[in-house]
Image 1 (cartoon, rainbow, N blue to C red):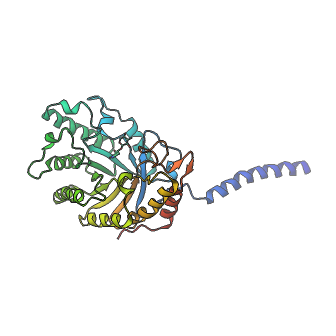
Image 2 (image 1 turned 45 degrees about the horizontal axis):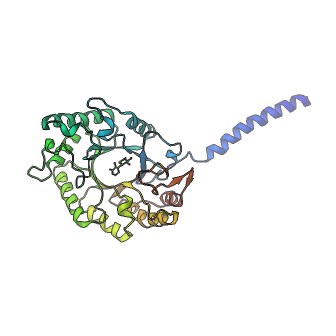
Length: 328
Ligand code: XIL
């Protein structure tokens, strides 16, 4: 009897051990992203593989290079979707918003495009847009044109050149995007306008042309360190207010901050500028451009180093989780 009791007791203990551990874990919320349940997302890039901790922070995905024409079709007619598929499949499986970046851009276009005749360029760019849209039909948004003020594509004239509006090639690009990706938000993305009123008014004028034609849903402000490190909160707010007058969504699309490189410098600038974005009603979501130190395009912008959060990341996730984003 004693023997029986003993073994039942030990079986019970083992069951309880498994059960109790299950109980403890089930009372801890499933690893949430910092912006889960918030009115805006906080996203990041995926560059070829999904880091194991990615889903504990970010809830929107942009491929860092995977959906650039030059990455996909480095050789004419031979499409390499590998890196794009990794990012897309992950985002779709998790229910995160996926943004294609980017269809028409003068940088990272395939080397072979510039040497084609204009009519061949026109065929090729349309084929590229059609193929990308067909492959990623659940894309939430697309940077249709990237950096129009800085990096004009070699195939601009094939898309109508300046034309009568001055920016016909952009209008054609958006028509193509709308035709082949009818379910995605269509965005135009740019850097360097954050603290430059004259660049801003140019960018706004293009956005207005698109808006008048019902072609654009929003603009992306890259918000890279080389602009934001040198801005204060009131400048950032003035920029967002200025863009808000367009009446389209605003996205912070490629945020990174270095600010001297120290933990304290980066933390201070995040604390100063991020709340301005989070609390601006026209800003609908924020995407950071990398976070793993040693893997970001600019050294010093990383937020997560050797498996540990830098102070700016710890602050950011606390701030986002505990502060309601302003949407109205
Ligand atoms: C950068 C990537 O981060 C790098 O890996 C790549 O070598 C060059 O492009 N603006 C953009 C992004 O719109 O696509 C750029 O990404 C950074 C600047």
